[in-house]
Length: 469
Image (tube, rainbow, N blue to C red; front, side, top):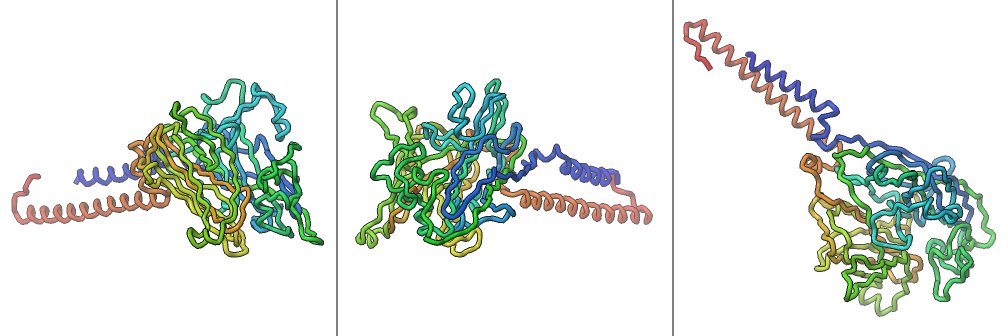
């Protein structure tokens, strides 16, 4: 009977071990996700007005951590989400930088006064150059229904003391571009920043716009005004970007991933005397779509398709992908040179009035989550980026960006079990199932053992010799 008691003690020991903090490494749950909700500085918008500002040194989690997700939305002073048909969220971006200790930066004008000896941009790993698309996160109207979570065991590593230059501190900035479209003459025209609606002929630095520039970021900069219907009046509102950050403490159980952003307007071209690995990638960020002709409507449904080839200056395993498009977009995709699809991202359009389902606006983008370790990009490999838009009508200031997260290595063996389960809930169900199965099995063994012991006892009492086991 001592062996049965030892079995129960062993089961109890297993239960205690699995419930302890140290046991979590086996299940890939060694880091508990932390969450914090922050507000941007207040910005004030009236009908037709524009906010496009850079906020430096924003509230952000500190320490050596791995980011798991970043989500945001525009809210009013009472904390209520604001619908896109009232305030259009053109884009928001979050970027990292290093600032010399003792130096203060409050806005973009202060930033321009700094030298490189005081301010260092800590860009993502993407291929665009000349200060273009250096952010870690960035979306727009699709924010509320676009997944940004990084699957386990991966995370975006930040705050590593070894990466922060001596005498500097790691900080974060936020750029919010919002357009109030209450009472405007042309909502879509205002959100596409058509220059005639803003009565703009110069950019924010006073430089004349080129004659063929019909609309885009150069016409809807901070404090510009889109044309409002005659006689329309409404209150100016205090608004905020509310953003939620999730992260875990960085340790050896987390596999770091890097952020790469591709742009359909990238002007890179392969040259005959270069591999392209160090070539310049000039990303214009936005482009214009001319309306199609009646014959094209019959032929291809009036779809404007842009494709570019890019040689990869890096290699690794893709674990996430998502595109960013504006109204009129019909999807974007990333292919290998032989046509194999690596990832596609399709917009979802709203069809109502409520927040998150605003008719005519992109309210979400589908995302890619390949099985970890299954989609590998080789250094020097050529990938094809494609961006599709409807060209039934004229569009200005559209974007065709594609974000991917890439890990240098596949998941570690100790995390293999967990990578098959994408949520903590599913993991808990499996764990409980295993434990209850163990309990049931031990119960069956105990019942059998008691029955055998009872039978042996009866046999001894009847004069039979007990069999030694």
